[in-house]
Amino acid sequence: ATDPVDDDGVEGSLQSTFIYDSFTERIVAEYTARTMRVEQYWENTRLLLLFYDAVCNYESNKKGFYGHMKNMSSLHMLADTPTILRDLDLAVIKDEGNKSKGTVATEGVNNYGRKLYNIWLNKEAVGKDGLKNAQCLRSLGLTQETINHNPKGNFDRISCMEKLFIMIADKQQMISGNQNDINEAAAGLAADPFFNK
Image (cartoon, rainbow, N blue to C red; front, side, top):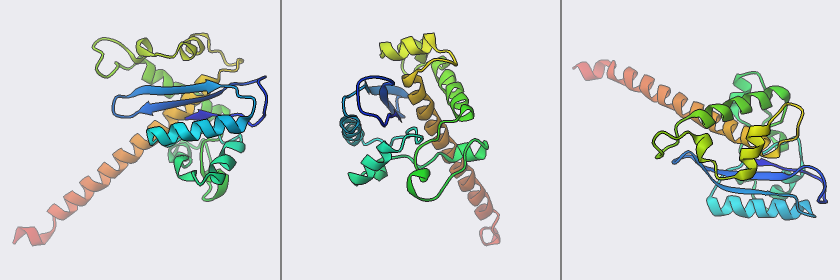
């Protein structure tokens, strides 16, 4: 997931990217910086996604990152707008262009993402008996932002976590929905008269 910016210069918000391993349910990489030229950050992020074979949910309020990925023939690395947001009436999903990728940051979307991040923080860490994910964070910056978070501040790493856990919730919903379809198909097949002959 990525929380990008569109403006050059070292002043203002940080750009932040986290890579999450869905098997270990852990954050495996972080790239948080404010480069002089935003294109440098976008390209470094693209290379990080390529290295980890990752798909990125990003804050699509900022249009520059989408344009860079399009110019580099890398749109396949950007996550489609999570359908879970449509299901919760938090977003309208478009079928084409930059509106079809990433997540538009609204107050409702951000609140939902923070709730999901909080749930993950309080879950027991995989492979770490008795420790919660919050106790296993390896990013000092993310830990500080998590502790100091308030509604009025600018917390770029937290914004990135919101997009990350929305994408994870969307994938989990998709998997459980597919499993239900498979179970229904199997039940229908078992009831077929052919198998009672």
